[in-house]
Image (spheres, rainbow, N blue to C red):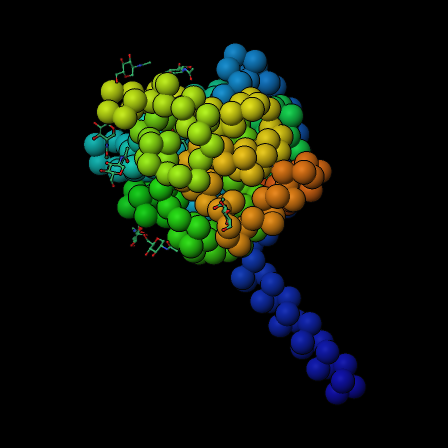
Length: 318
Ligand code: HEM
Ligand SMILES: *[C@@H]1O[C@H](CO)[C@@H](O)[C@H](O)[C@H]1NC(C)=O
Ligand SMILES: *[C@@H]1O[C@H](CO)[C@@H](O)[C@H](O)[C@H]1NC(C)=O
Ligand SMILES: *[C@@H]1O[C@H](CO)[C@@H](O)[C@H](O)[C@H]1NC(C)=O
Ligand SMILES: *[C@@H]1O[C@H](CO)[C@@H](O)[C@H](O)[C@H]1NC(C)=O
Ligand SMILES: *[C@@H]1O[C@H](CO)[C@@H](O)[C@H](O)[C@H]1NC(C)=O
Ligand SMILES: *[C@@H]1O[C@H](CO)[C@@H](O)[C@H](O)[C@H]1NC(C)=O
Ligand SMILES: *[C@@H]1O[C@H](CO)[C@@H](O)[C@H](O)[C@H]1NC(C)=O
Ligand SMILES: *[C@@H]1O[C@H](CO)[C@@H](O)[C@H](O)[C@H]1NC(C)=O
C-alpha cells in the first residue's frame, strides 16, 4: 500500500512537472478547427516558388530568425509603427529578410477558410517546411499550437542572431543558448544549400582569407568588388546547385568553397570536420538529421495555451 501511494505520488508529480514546464505543441492541433490549413500553405508556397525559387530559401531564413529571438512566436513578422519598434530593421534582418508578402497571402487564405484560429507563428513554421520540400529537400511533421507574440525585441534580434563573420566558438555558444548543439549548428547550416547572399557579407572572406579555393574566390570577386560599390550584389550560397535542397553545401565546404566565414569554420580543422565530411558523402544522413533539427528549432520557447494571441494580421498585434 505504501509502495502504491509512493508510486502514485511520484507519477502525479512527474505529470505535474511535465505539464507546467512543457506546454506541448502537437501535430494535429488544427485537424478539427482548420482542416484545410496544410493544403492552403502548400498551394500558396507552390505558386510562390514557381514564380521565384529563392522565396523558399527566404522563408526558411525568416523562420530561423523568428525562432532565435524570443522563440518561434511570429515576432519577426511585426511591422514597425510610430509607437512600436519591431525586429525587421535589426541589423541581421534589415534589407535582408524577405518573404513577408507570401506569409500575408497564406494568412489571408487561412482567415477566409477558418478565421481567428491559426497563428502566424504556425503558418511560418509550415511555410518553411514546405519551401524545403518544394526545393527537393526532406519533409517533417511540424508540431503546431504556437501563438503569436504581442511584442518584439530589436536589441535581442541584434545580439542573438548569428553573423557571417563569427567563429565556430561563438556560433556554437549562440546555438547552445537556444538549446541546440554543435551538431545542430552544423546540420542546420546545411540550409545554406539554397538561397543568396550579399557581397558586403562575404567580401572579407573572398579577399582576405586563405582557406578558400582560389578559383572560387576569383569567381566571386568578379561580381563583388573590393570597394563598397557592389555591396548588395548577390551570389548563391551553394555554388553547385543554388535552388536545390541537397547536400552540396557540405561538398563545397570540403572543397573550401564556403561563401561565408561562418560556413567555412565548420570545415577548418575543427570539431565539426567529421560531421561535415560525413554529410558531404551521405545525403540520406543529412536529410534525416536536418528534419529532426528543424523540429527541434521549431520548438524553441513557443507561446501556448492562453499566452500571446492569434493575430488577425501577421504584421500587427490585434
Ligand atoms: C549558423 C549561423 C548562420 C549565419 C551566420 C547565417 C548567415 C546568413 C547570411 C549572412 C545570409 C545572407 C543574407 C543576405 O545576404 O541578405 C544567410 C542566408 C540564408 N540563411 Fe543563414 N545563417 C546561419 C544559419 C542559418 C540557419 C540555421 C538557417 C535555417 C535553418 C539559415 C537559412 C538561410 C537561408 C535559407 C538563406 C538564404 C536566404 C535568401 O536567399 O533569401 N541560415 N544566412
Ligand atoms: C536599415 O536600412 C536602411 C536602408 O539601407 C537604413 O537607412 C537604416 O538606417 C537601417 N536601419 C537600421 C536600424 O540600421
Ligand atoms: C469570423 O467570421 C464570422 C463569419 O464571417 C464572423 O461573424 C466573426 O465575427 C469572425 N470572427 C472574428 C474573430 O473575426
Ligand atoms: C530584449 O532583449 C534584450 C537583449 O537580449 C534584453 O536585455 C531585454 O530585457 C529584452 N527586452 C524586453 C522588453 O524583453
Ligand atoms: C572567437 O571570437 C570571439 C569573439 O569575437 C573571440 O573572443 C575568440 O577569441 C575567438 N575564438 C577563436 C578560437 O578564434
Ligand atoms: C583585409 O585585411 C586588411 C588588413 O587586415 C584590411 O585592411 C582590409 O580592410 C581587409 N579587407 C576586407 C575586404 O575585409
Ligand atoms: C561592381 O563594381 C565595379 C567597380 O568596382 C563596377 O565597375 C561594376 O559595374 C559593379 N558591378 C555591378 C554588377 O554592380
Ligand atoms: C551579380 O549581381 C547581380 C546583382 O545582385 C545579380 O543579379 C547577378 O546574378 C550577379 N551575377 C553573377 C554572375 O553572380
Ligand atoms: C588542416 O591542417 C592540415 C595540416 O596542418 C593543412 O594541410 C590543411 O590545409 C588544413 N586545412 C584547413 C581547411 O585548414
